[in-house]
Amino acid sequence: MSQLDTRVPAVLLRIDRNPFHHGTLGAVRSLGRAGVEVHVVADADNSPVRRSRYVRRLHPPPRPGASDAEILAALREVAARVGRPAVLVPMDDATAIAAGRLRAELTPSYLLPDVPAGLPERVADKAELAAVCASAGLPHPTTLIPDSPQRAADDALRLGLPVVAKWSRPWLLPPGSGLRSTQLVHSPRQARELYLRTAEAGSPLLLQAYLAPGADRDWFFHGYADRSGTVRAGGPGRKQLAWPRGAGLTAVGRWTPNPEVCALAGRLVGALGYRGVLDLDFRRSGSTGRYHLLDFNPRPGAQFRLFADSAGLDVVRALHLDLTGRPLPEGEPVAGRSFVVENYAPFAALRTAPGGRELAWYAGDDRVPGWVMWALWARHVSGRLRQRLVPAVPVPAPRAATPLLTDNEKASS
Image (cartoon, rainbow, N blue to C red; front, top):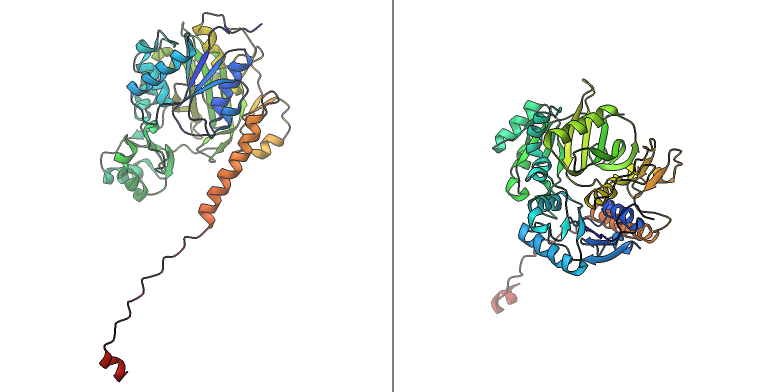
């Protein structure tokens, strides 16, 4: 018998168009295996997610950059098709923020955590996070927000190169712009050029003191703050491999006990009154040993399935159980368990894992998405290689027109 109330379906919502978002597949499998009817509102036409046996139905998502009114209209259409109240699971920052703003309008059709108004947007905004950390007493890297191109160049020098450049609201970045939510800046000129793209990015540029990566320095915490504010499920993990290296998503992570990281997460939740799923990123300073909060994502992190405990509880199941009024089982942490994203760390996926392991894409009870991922990934990589290796075809200069000769000129030539 399932621990979850299988009479209540789940609706996973994602606006981000990334076809390789393995966190969505993780949520589909976690809830589907427990017998919950899973609906996916996402652009999954070219994604392995659509091939999962646990997807009950796919629904068209709102467009990237959709307004709250558009998101509300799309979710009301889904609610009409589902036909009964469902647990809503936002899978990216944009939809988590919209769900927080639209909670009153969505409540009749969807079950949502009672998060304070405006809080998801505040914690997800990189420029606001420094103030959030200050209010909770958490270390945060020194952050400056330049107000001109020259100020951006000066701030980069003031912080000490290299510096981390972030866009305050990365969910507003236009697709295909080439702008990255986070990148390292190695010169004042780079900082100046990035600032000049502020209007295109849709949010302010901020520059942050760089904390160098290293062994045992990159950590994350996933958890669920229940209706009482108690942090349940989840746990602390150590990032062993990132993609891109040093500043990217977790390609290989390991569940590693860390009381200090757990205490920082609990302090933050208590100070803010946060409710719901959270994903935090920390980096430990090599000089002071202190853990600095780098990001607060008000939704499930892509590797949340790492923290499935001995009772099978993860943060997505905790959300469903809590919102349907069911008790959360008391399981034991599975320290040493690892999570591997095969397309970013293929060799790690082949190595033995004494502490247990979960793969992002392949699963014995749901094999097709893993097979589809490799076919799509091979096509994706080969396309990128062609763009890099095939030289641009030079365009020949226009030939000068041959002048027309008169009869007299022809005769004399």
